[in-house]
Structure formats: C-alpha cells, structure tokens
Amino acid sequence: MARVDAAVEPILADYATSYCLRPVRRREVSPSPVDANPGVTWSIDGETIVEFRYEERGPDRLVVHDIALVVPLQRRLRSRRVKVAHVSSGGTS
Image 1: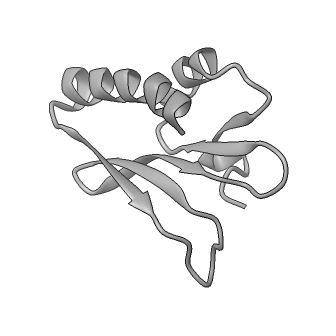
Image 2: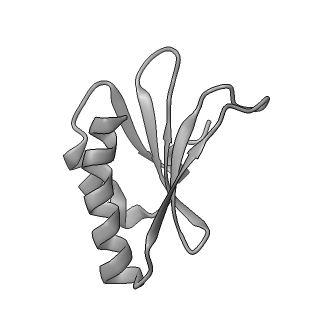
C-alpha cells in the first residue's frame, strides 16, 4: 500500500487543488459482507475519484472514477501487481 500511496497521493493532490480547488480526502475501507477485501478510497467533496482494492488472488485494482486521472495513474503505477482501470471499463466488478 505504501508504494501505491506514494504514487497516487501527489497526482490526486495536484488534480484536486489545481482543477477542483478542493482538498482530496483518503479513507480506509474495512472489509464488509458484500466485499471481503479491504481497500482505500480517495474523494473530493464526498465524491469518490479513485478506489484501491486489495485482491486475494491476482493483481490489486486501482479503480479510477475520473477519466482525466487514468493515464497519469497508469504511467505512475506500471506494475503487474496493480491493475489500473476506469470505472466504465469494468473496474468495479
């Protein structure tokens, strides 16, 4: 998680302050009956912009809700251990 945080935080902070003029908030998500895997959610004004989901098998997922962030995050997270996907491309399944 530390590597993902180090890669994601600066991009989201820049985007939030430069384009949205709002702070970004990070929240850890505990496992639930619906989704047994923990994760992290970043949001601006209560609207989720990025979700990190731990996976038991296979690569972890970074689900991006704002299309403008997909390419910068993919460039920063070039790893077979983390898959970056936009929410419309099936990233939430």
